[in-house]
Structure formats: structure tokens, C-alpha cells
Image (cartoon, rainbow, N blue to C red):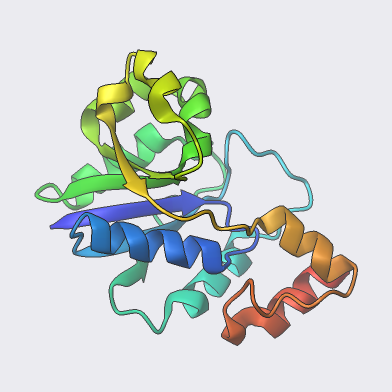
Length: 192
């Protein structure tokens, strides 16, 4: 099977995540997309981030209506950092016959070298990069890992988890940004 991997803190999950997953699923003929909430994201240290179990349950509800989406606990260990390398090793052990495609936005390109053992990661999974048409990607062609990146054209999604949290704190409407079935829970979670 061809399995897309969409990981992150999902603080909170939003319509941009769902659109990214659906676009990758369709563009690369994936069999499914696995959502992987991280318990201990090494590049995002928040003291105010909700517990991973709460974020897991919100993602589970947000993707429930799409049978091509699944959620996994494989990246939820909060004791050790959620390194992509360790996640991929666990996935290969659990699903040795499957091929994995890590799905991310183009903002990740500049962060790749900060990843733990990023060269190993690039040699063991495919990377699908959602590329905004208004960004010139020729500047990336000089990167030593450019050939490992698969670009997926996608209109910009002007949604961020940070903005959603701020909007909730300020009492603003988030209905167009998040799945309707989790909107009230997100308001309760982030308004305090």
C-alpha cells in the first residue's frame, strides 16, 4: 500500500490539514493518509499545548467522515522526542510491505536539515511537498536533497493553528477554518 503520513502537533487540527491530506491522496494515488499526532514535537516546545490524548481525539473526530483517513498512536510517546526517523522505523516494523509518503507544506524545506538524522529519513521515505504556485522553487534546486522532494501544486490555504487559537481567545468565529463537528470543543479548549 501507498500510505501518506501527516504528522504534527495538531494544536488544533483544522481544514487546512484535511485539504492537504485529501490533495496528497488524490495527486499521488495514495491508498490512505495516516494522521499522526505527536506527543513530544522536537521543534515545537509549548508548555500550553493540550495533552496529546485530547489532540488525538479531536483529530479522530475531524477525520471520521473520510474512510481514506486513519489516525495512529505511533507518534504519541511523550517521554521521547517525536523524531521522524523513529516514527518511520516503527512504521516499517509494523507495515514492512508498505511505502510511506510524508506530507508537508513547503515551509518544511528550510527545516529539513534540523531534523534528527534527516538524510536517513530522506533515504527511507518519500516527501510530498505542498507547493504554493506563487513561490519560486528554483532556489531550492541547489539543496543536496532536492531530488528527494515530490512537489504537489496546491492553492495556498490561509489557515494556521496559531491564528485559530488567537481567534478563539478573542471570541471570533472559526467556523470556516475547522470541521464543524469539533468547533465547540475547540472553543472550550482554547478560550480559557
